[in-house]
Length: 324
Image 1: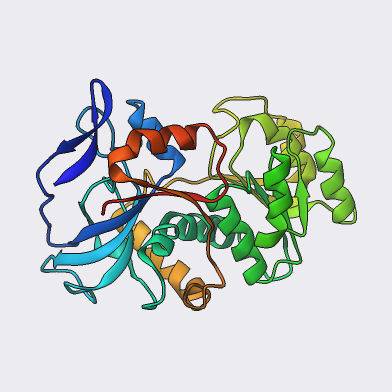
Image 2: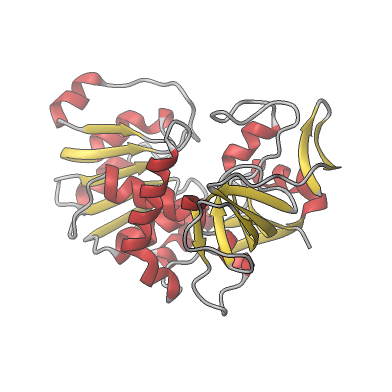
């Protein structure tokens, strides 16, 4: 099969063996795969959990048709149209655990639309509902809201009954579009005064939950903007891996600062994340209440260009690659 593979010369399109199905897995003929920022690390030769190094095929999400199912796989069969998360999705075929697979909910939903959803839905439901302990009526802020995952986070918060949804972006054009995806207030996180705007919008109380995709460069400002006993859930580090942290402010606000990643989770944990997400959100997925804009679709043969486009950070929504 054809796949985008990390070689000593970088990402190249090579012919590799088709993956073999284990008893708990499904084999999918990939139609469309989605790009995520973690793919940039893998393409640069870095490890992402257990994935990385020469010979690695990047790709965390895709949509397609099931070709084969393992002996222990429930509820799926060959021919099913599905969306998946996992590893090695930049290829014509990919395997993943059955618990990371969801049926495409309608014949009207395209493979392109479906490929935008797996990572964003699971990541943001887990961050907002499970780790953020969201309750109806809470206020929610998404740092780095113009990413695909960020846009989904705002929509999930609004769908589940947030009283106020705030999104941030340092780009004025993208910031202006956040209201179309659930933001009641859109802020520039590069402006030092943005925490005061959050406090003003919340009557001086601060926001209940911050889902942070930026991290280091805004860590102390997040704590200033958060409510007493609020939650800050760290899901990304676009602003750097290390930075200043005001421990006294953290203690004063009695904040719950939580780091999350899929890299150290067991199969059972990931299956449960997918189950919980579907229980809360699948009606909204079926009705396309929750959906993401597609910025651009590249052919798989142009994987290097697609990754460069993501690295340039000029997109809004999802970048996809088609295998056909």
